[in-house]
Length: 66
Image 1 (cartoon, rainbow, N blue to C red):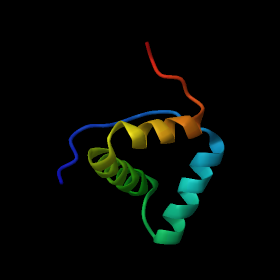
Image 2 (cartoon, rainbow, N blue to C red; image 1 turned 120 degrees about the vertical axis):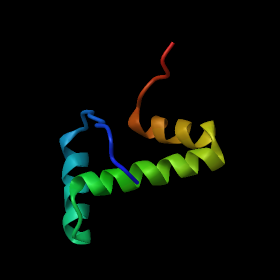
Image 3 (cartoon, helix red, strand yellow; image 1 turned 90 degrees about the horizontal axis):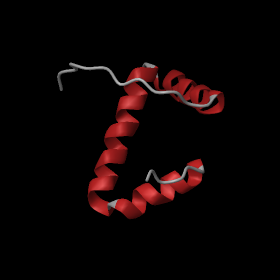
């Protein structure tokens, strides 16, 4: 898959450290691990739809946008 754009966002430091630890244990870059998680999450979303996303957003403690 050709990489032709950037995606930039902020996360809390605990999540960053967790992803960095996963990257080290898997011998991959943080970017590659994030891409894999995003790809996996988007596939689950395609199958489960809004229920999946609402469950995850609930864990983040975020409110829906108006």
